[in-house]
Image 1 (cartoon, rainbow, N blue to C red):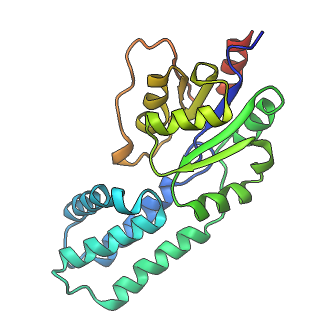
Image 2: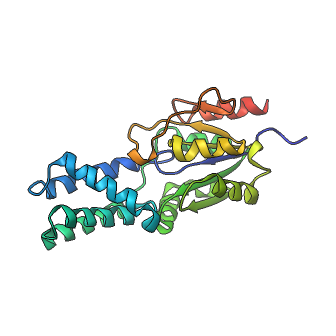
Image 3: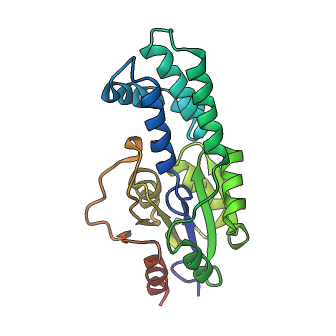
Length: 234
């Protein structure tokens, strides 16, 4: 008899390792560089509007983030942004791409504990090369049975992934820090959605939790996923 839960999928950025913190630090640097041209609140609003506008073209990730910073810098300075500022923004992006991976607490133990009993997947958004680099440097790559790097986490995208790797959404759990991208779309398909909060979340990823959904679970830390998963198969 097939178990009710056979596959557990994990988001990567800010679920397995730190990510958004580095974006915030770079935005601090961005605000300092353009302090003579725009107050920080205004700059952040313009930057967020650029990111939202550019998602369809650049997708998620550091490269799109840097291009949006450059576009915003050109706009707020009325095309007078100094070349050294543009150079420093590019260098900031390059530093982000070189930053070593820093796993979040309990991640390695959780993944290693679950690996013998479940099929494990990584489902993440972002730049292909950057996400492959992060997974390779994490030291966890060999523990996952599949890796999917997508442009957008829609129900249709998840449905296609589940069809390739699992016995279907009903026997699959998705674990992540984004209610909007990691939880709500999979609940729509009938999978379990597990929210693991992270201290910093991008504004475009915020969404309200579902109300009274039988397959939604909220945990305080990723280590609690082990107990939850085994309870579902007992």
